[in-house]
Structure formats: C-alpha cells, structure tokens
Amino acid sequence: MAAYRELCYATRLPIRSLFSPKQRARILMKGAHAPGRYAAGNLLRRCSTSNSGKQTFNQTKSNYSTSQEADEPFSSEEEQSEESDTAAVRQLVLNSALEFVPAFGWSVDALSEGARAEGLPGVAHGMFPRGGGDLVHHFVKECNAQLAEKLAREVQEETAEEEQGGKRGRRAVPLIRDALEARLRMIIPFIEQWPQAMALMVVPSNTKEHFSNLSQLMDDIWYHAGDRSVDFNWYTKRVALLAIYKSAELTLVQDKSTDFQETWMFIDRRLADFSRMYKLRSDIDHTVGSLSSLMTAAYTVGRNVAGVNNRNR
Image (tube, rainbow, N blue to C red):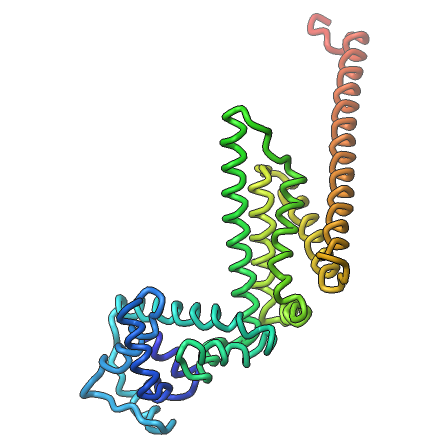
C-alpha cells in the first residue's frame, strides 16, 4: 500500500501508532464529512482495516519490520487510491504549514506545526524529505498557478472588451510589467523569511525543481503577453525576463521604501532597457536583411550587365 509505506517510512513508525484515539476519531470524522479535503480519514481507515486478522501493528520498530514482511500485495487500483490520498494529505499539511512560516521560517518546524494544526502528529513532517525545500516549492507553484489564472482571466476580459469596440488591451510590455509586480507581491507576506527560501533553492536537491518552476513562470507570462515565437527568440525572451525577475526579487528583499516603490521602478527601468535592446536588435536584423537583399540585387544586375546570365550566349 503506497501511502502506508510512504508514511511509515517517513516517520519510522507503524501508521496506527502515529495517532492517539482522539486524533483518530477527529480524522475519521473529517474524512467522512469531507473526503475530498480530508483524505487522511480514508488513509487511516485503509491502514487500520486492510489486513485485519493478518497483521497487528505494534509500537516497536522490530515488530513493525516483522509485520511488514507479512504485508500482502495490493491491486493497482488500491495503490493509485492510496497515492491520491497521500498527495491530498501532503497538500493539506503544506497549506497549513504556510501559516507558521512567519514564526518558524521555511523549516521542518513549520511543517510539524502545520501537521498538528490538522490533527496529525508532528512527526508527519517526515513525509517531506527536503524539509523546508518542499514547503518553498509548494508555495512557488501555488503562486505561479494563481498568476497564470489571473493573466488568463484578464487577457480574456480585455479581448472581449476590445472586440466590443472598447479600449485596446495592454501591449506586451505593460502586461509583463503588471505580471512581474503581481507575482513579486505574493512574496511580501513572507518578505522577512524570503532570503531563507532563496538560499534553500540553491541547495542541489532543490535546484532542478526550482528552475522548472521559474521556467514555467516565464513561459506563462510570455504566452499571455502574446508571444508565439518558435525560433531562437523563444529562448532569448525567456532568459531575459528571468534575469529581470530574479534581479527584481533581490531588490525586493532589500527594499525599505514605501510599498516597495523602488522595486517597481527597478522593473520599469529593466523592461525599458529590454525594449530598447529588442528594438535595436530588430532594427539591426531589418537593416542586415535589407542590405543583404540590396547586395543580392546588385550582384544579379552585375551578372546581367556582364552577360553571365544570358542563356543565348
């Protein structure tokens, strides 16, 4: 059973020993009334009834090892169901743990407090092998998803208004600017703890997922800004925007101005630089293309004048 194995491995204890009778009753009651949110109840029921008569879960680690050997295989449907329940429990703990970040930082302590707030034992933090790193990834993904939903809704509303003869929607750069500010504002509730989160993201075990989240964020912003490029510009635009975002993030954690105005002005300057650079590059590409066409035409005319292209020659 996937969820059973994961939670038992994480805590090094039998799953039934993780809950007091009072906790078990609370979780089972929550699971009965809101199975979608409180999947812990379903998880607890399965762990306590799956092998009744065949297994006895003991408090000691040695007895648990003996009972684990006697565990009978489960069907793929049950495995998938348990994995779904485990994911729901993890999501529940992570969401709750965010409330404790201001007090405990991006740490195992925040995860433990989040678990206790949901009626789970504090040792449930063992479900998160990267500790505070898992909590940061969860927060970043939630923020990225909220921003993508916000941009999609705004672009749809602006498009509908424009089609009805209203004002024209925002151009790419203003939309990108608003998106960067909206995303960075999501960090402000945890501004004091964010340097710790940034440090966790450079830990090797977190780096891959961190850059994956950043890549998704840049892609979402450019997509809703109307970028549909399929050439090398696809990469250069996203790398340039990533540099602006990360430098603005560093500015934000050091910003002491009212409402972080220095950070928003910093973004304006960097985007202005980007626009000028991109316009200059477009002008250069256009000039080079025109010059190439002119040289080709001159070369063709020269060949014609010289009779090189005369087939009757």
